[in-house]
Image 1 (cartoon, one colour):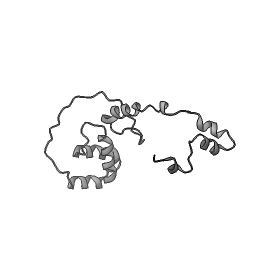
Image 2 (tube, one colour; image 1 turned 60 degrees about the vertical axis):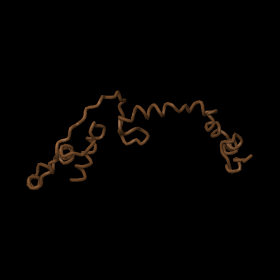
Image 3 (cartoon, helix red, strand yellow; image 1 turned 90 degrees about the vertical axis):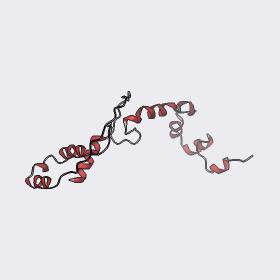
Image 4 (tube, rainbow, N blue to C red; image 1 turned 30 degrees about the horizontal axis):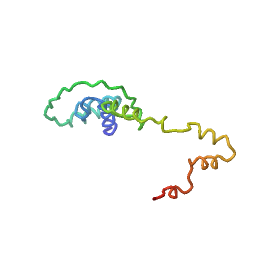
Length: 138
């Protein structure tokens, strides 16, 4: 129950202004993760006997809201997981112009249609059998 509660609390605070795990976040995580088991008398007795520590109240500083594009947080490591970094990462990825760096975008499709695709790729200097020999010190 504890690990499910903590995991759910983490999910709830990711993307929030304050991503700290607080007693309130743990209570919300517990309600979401252990909805059925929290209604049993055994859990209610243990909950009454053990209380969460009371910390001092924190002053939350208000900051300007930035216009941030929404991020799909489905576990895709190629996408920014925190929306506060999303706009900068999208800008950075967009700055790389791959189309200008690729001379022949259909090269591998052309090679796939040939009888000996590796020979074709070697002739175009795409596949190098000994890449260190290509490094000539002059």
